Image 1 (spheres, one colour):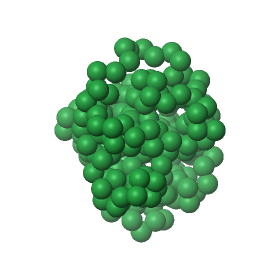
Image 2 (tube, one colour; image 1 turned 135 degrees about the vertical axis):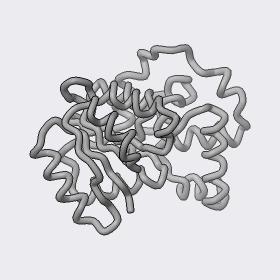
Image 3 (cartoon, rainbow, N blue to C red; image 1 turned 60 degrees about the horizontal axis):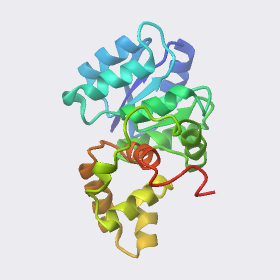
Image 4 (cartoon, helix red, strand yellow; image 1 turned 90 degrees about the vertical axis):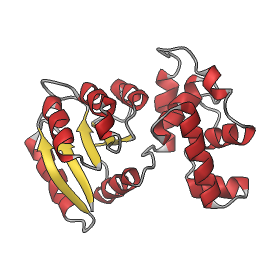
Length: 221
């Protein structure tokens, strides 16, 4: 059972998401938060698998709440999906930098929302390649920390190749097909790359690939 925490300041939105999620046999909403501070408290208390986090909330916004949750070693297994009204919200990129596993716009189709929760719960990033390219193109030109070239130097040639493919939005199965290896081998390469680059999520791999200029906006179009 995938345990979900809903964090949104609109009760009607939470009610709609709860009805949808609880209708699935493999998903259960364990708690609801109306602001970011409550989301942090409930995440610590409930240890959900996935948090659906609204970006704009009172008391503490979704970005600050995401930082606090992901900074807690006890909540290392918690995955956060940012909810937003707009797919190019400036805060989304900051959330991905922080370690959020992806984002969904609030008018996402019901089945896509359920599938998104399942994708994130199994450890993958919820990043639409088309939207991600536009998002990164808008904000990757304004990095707020030095390019992580030293960390990239630790990668083997195959791991750098895998990093580029992850940035292109390919799944482990698609990477395996492209490299002519087994899906298990592809997953191992991705995992080793994350360990060497000290990131917790595929979403952070994508951000790092752009910020380090290993790939550039528009190259996949």
